Amino acid sequence: MSNNEIKKILENSKTIAMVGVSSEKKGEDPKNLKRKPANVVMKYMQDFGYKVIPVNPFAAGEIINGEVVIKDLEEIKVPIDIVDVFRPSKEAPGIAIKAAKIGSKVLWLQYGLHSDEAEKISENSKMQYISDKCIKQEYQKIFEKSNPVFPVLRN
Image (spheres, rainbow, N blue to C red):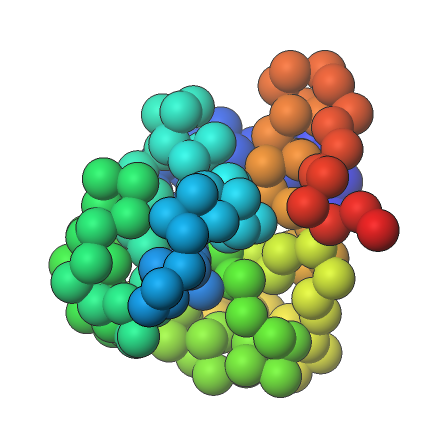
């Protein structure tokens, strides 16, 4: 997918369902939560005006970055432009089916993720498919003209 296509998606999208946002584990330092990649990306996209709905079945009802965590994509009651996935690639086909069911325009698999099956499901559902790209990095590259580093992912 070209930078222009990604730019159009980001310009024309307002609501992101983020699958895999982390909740606080018992006994975990709350500061760790702010450093988890999905949570960093969620906060960043919120700061740039996107409505981000966190999806995590193990944290349903909790509040993360000011938003109530939803158990499942199919429970979201507002139109979703992008389903952004922070889960293992093997879970992507199931997420793609649900994303199609709720009428998402885009299935976005984060950095390091790809699924041929999810790509086929997306194509068959007229959903745009992006994989192995970080939505935050793409936003920065396109709109802030910076080439960001995601220190959490570098080792």
